[in-house]
Length: 255
Image 1: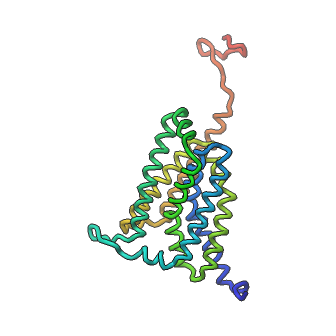
Image 2 (image 1 turned 60 degrees about the horizontal axis):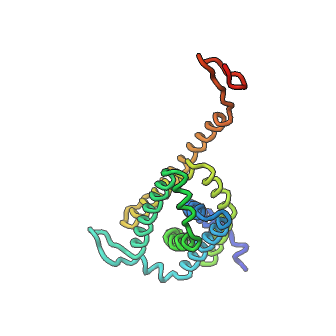
Image 3 (image 1 turned 90 degrees about the vertical axis):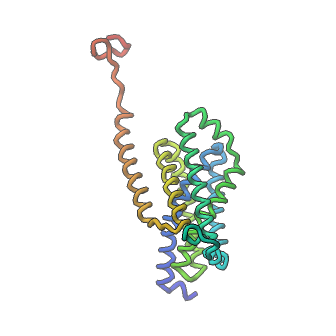
């Protein structure tokens, strides 16, 4: 129990927890959008199960350190770039994100009728399978980063559990906010496109600092929040009826 009085342990735990929450933002967006395609009574269960699978995936990967280390070993070379198992997973995940996000944006812009049909066709099992598969991609970087920052598995597992707990508490409000504001949903899907490109680049050893990506996402969200604040007074303002020759109309509609 000496770890309780060790400040370095607590610093590592807090740092890793914050890092896991930040790295889990894209995971929450992806799960929220997929769960939003389910019937209303299944959406909460889909979000909880999705985040639960994300937590289990990260813990399993942490407990399989030898597997993680083998994934970073080069398998073959393409145009001078050494490709490992991790690179293949990142490229496949990035391509999946690009295709999925593009289709979601297309469905969103095609109109309410087509979107409703696509929503009704979504099955709970299909959504959970998609979340489970992509949790592996989202977890790889998170786990590798955690391994590099701490050398105690217990601290890393505790940080993951705390971070997922925080994400579970915030996932419902984030999902509701995304669903209520169509422009925010398009923005979130654009973030997934950006993350997909970054994953593919990372798979080919082109490192894009995540700080740039998160800054771009935060700046876009700030601009959209300002736009929403500016649109709110216009939406709530009463519409003045105008009669012929630009005269104000009477309450009964006559000039």
